[in-house]
Image 1: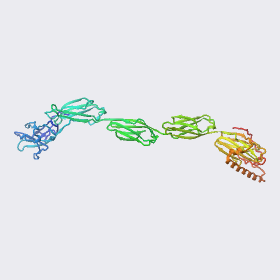
Image 2: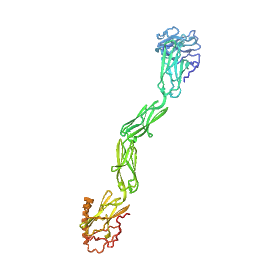
Image 3: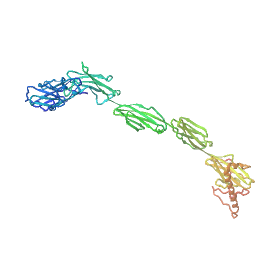
Image 4: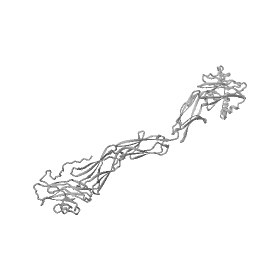
Length: 582
């Protein structure tokens, strides 16, 4: 708001009291448009005891001291002036009334400067006043804009021009104010130092769109061609609005990603890129680029851009989706089960987009899902056939990963049909083939001799396991005129099975079953048996057979009539059913 007053003229006196001292008053500064005129108001005083008949005066330009020969602007005694002021200066005031007001016309830039007045009362009564007025020759109106213009808040802009020429009065009009508001003219106002101004006001509520708007004021003088224009650009302050930002972004793992955020505000905003509350980058700028090198799935998520200044803030988000191949699937669930139980196996992975998940066994697809991260496999009432290696495969358009896992089905022993005995010359070989999980203990029983031989007696029994199948071989040497009954019993924690082994005429099949390694081991066992029998027969002083506690596995020796030399004579026999199950 412009504050102008119409107070009485303030005199600048050399002395505080009027009368009895030299003193003068004039505005310290005054302005006028080029080509117009200016009236510099001036009053002076001198001591009362000086009563001159005639009062004269002189106006000097840029210096108060005559000895410096400053240009004379006006001189009442001779009317002789400097050539720059010829025809352009005259005195408006009456020196006898102590009024020294000066009028300068046809103003040009070179007339701008300091003007001093000297009183001449005759003789030695002359005095040059130190007070002076500075004339400013202008050619543009003065547009006054408040130091802070905020969008949405009413402002007042004023146009002020000097009105110190009594011969020419300025008229004001606004330029470029359309859409802002209607001007109001205050008219001619007097300033504190006695100079005059013309003032026009413009009230409006600016928007962010008005920022940078060029607002003008024109001063014209009727009946002349003189026109002067001045302009001011509006600096409208307003809060940020994010105007530029990526939409949702998809990027392949390992690629380069650029996220751009641009905001419109005045002053420029502080732009901040954030993710999960963590500041990634910030700067005072109109736009800010966030560079992500070789993106990983861990960088997948929502990114936020915050724009703020002293007048407000704005924020927006963008979602970055990192596309990548499936991770190696993980398998959580039952990997060991008892026959007849229901098995549930969960295979899961992570990828973008979601993968196709497949579980298969021996190239047979058991379960599959499309565009899901988890796959559940249900196997009701598992059997030994379900035992084995499984694969979980995850794939999408960016790659494939697989995980193998084993399902172990535990079950009671099963004696396979390959189990039998074969006699050749003086040797009997019995093959007990058992399928079981966990591995069973196998024992061979000779009921007629009250003898049981198990795997711990390696000189008579050799065992070899392949997968879930255990093959145990019992080898007996002697004259096999009447082959004994031999019962094979397999036992684990889930039960037991027994089978009286049938005899076959040939034993070639047994060698094929046990393979070359088994043949070598069997041959070694035969040599050991022969040596053992030889040593036993030499022990003539043995009169009593040793006894065995429960759980011991006594050695079994066979004579030519299959008599077990080391067994107790009253060894209690066990009643064994052909296919016993516990």
